[in-house]
Length: 378
Image (cartoon, rainbow, N blue to C red):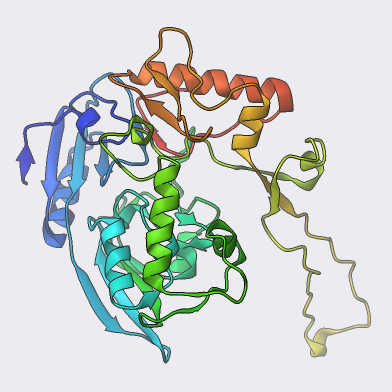
């Protein structure tokens, strides 16, 4: 097992917190990753895997288990199963934005709006990352996994990952364990072959973000360049010279609430339906139909509301910080908690709790953290 001298996690995570763990192992190939995980699991000690460290909030005390760094790389083009589509199989440790750049250069569409998202390819399906109307669930075909409970390697379809809004069966939500304890080894996407020319953009959310009219035509490269520019203006592209990027991106999830709860919020609170309110369908086999049709229960719709709006309307604006703290909200938007220079995890957690309490006092809603928390409580 390629064990290395443990590196402080503050050097490997974008929030820049965390001491050196008790043990650290680098896995640079697929086989090395599998054998390393087998060895670590055999010890029975605590563990977690680390990719780009962009969705991780680590506490100040040293982690007493093993951190496995996934450093595998590689993209393999494969034939698509539909005319006009190509599949790409990507190793889990491959940089996500490098994959997007590869796809754009190859004229393959489906992930270009997710340009600039930090992290690795293997982490992307875990929380079904997305931006400007594109999400992993739209292009993901399958993932190769290794399960902790059995040590077996298997390839599962996207449907088996339970992808939802910023979640999957693999994600560890705050206060709970993932439904399936497994590590992604590789991921396969199916992308449309559109080439380098200009074309109309179907997604309304992407058109709105890039200020495009419905009949405007642009190339994949144009989209990538403008998404990177837009994200950079919000401090969402990693930049060592910009402390607003010393964050885990949006620290709080946009809240998904019931329609009835959403009606208790001010009318000006931005909101979006999570699922269409479709009429339910009941299928009754003809050979068993007795003339009676049971009453169907209407499906309750859910609504996603803007957590950034709730935070700002609670009196907490951009750049907000507590006295004598080195943690603050981003100067560019209200959802990112940032490390302004050697802030401890305790300082960031204190700010997060303060924001949660303010929003709960004003609106009766507890905001949930989006990053995975290791050794930290809110």
